[in-house]
Image (cartoon, rainbow, N blue to C red; front, side, top):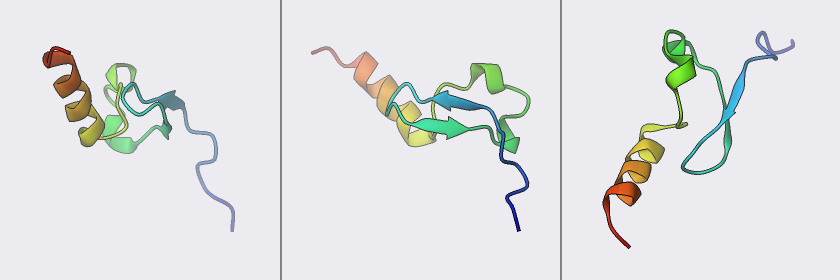
Length: 52
């Protein structure tokens, strides 16, 4: 049996640089989604707020 959703949109995560695909929970705000997970989102915010 073939996968039912083979052609979902993809983006590259700004934190880990890995590709991730569209999810139902992101249906309303897909254009604003930048990170593949909450972990990447937290990691990115943490690295921005701390000075080098």
